[in-house]
Image (tube, rainbow, N blue to C red; front, side, top):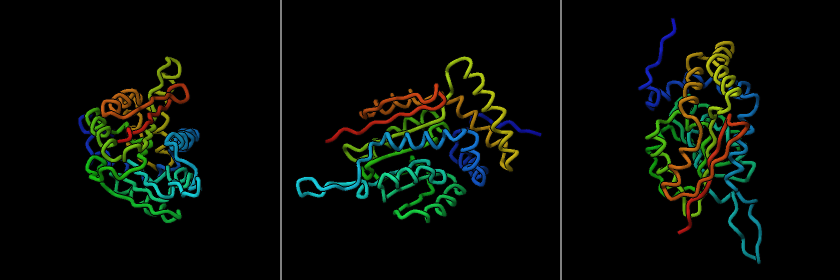
Length: 254
């Protein structure tokens, strides 16, 4: 018999961590399959929006700062799915943060594949105290699990983490707005993804929650406003007819 998850628990950090623990064994494959590969494309687009410069070059005899010297904070990192794009861009120092012990365990195993300094922290992003340490902040598909007040706090945390002139980029699955695509998308989120989760040996209820989070979240527009309220430049962008959205920008120089 199915049980209905109380909505007041949806954004509780322990509840969210538990959900992703239950999906950890199947999330990587299912996320790719259920998004028809778009999740990978959208992660790459998110990293591209960081505007990471080309590797260190010589300018008038002076070595310029390159990505190998810079630090990326990867928030709600999951299993480190953004790392291939980050390391391909030349980044060699990544601080990754996630609530879920299961996801963090898999992330630490995955980190061994990279010739990079990757630190995986199992903690709530809101508890980070690393003020002014990040050249870049990136987050792929973590916004939807946060409450409105938590997203306000995340905007503040993004400002705190970034160095002056630092850049950020967020991407999230979004609720398509057009009536025809919205109907199909909701059906897919509510019915098809939980079914696929069960077929692949995953937790159907946990995968069903991803659709509920997406419908409740909407898109990145409001979060862009929250970032702007913190004095950050922030540009919103819709992807693939509103099925995903991004917000990216920078912290002003001192």
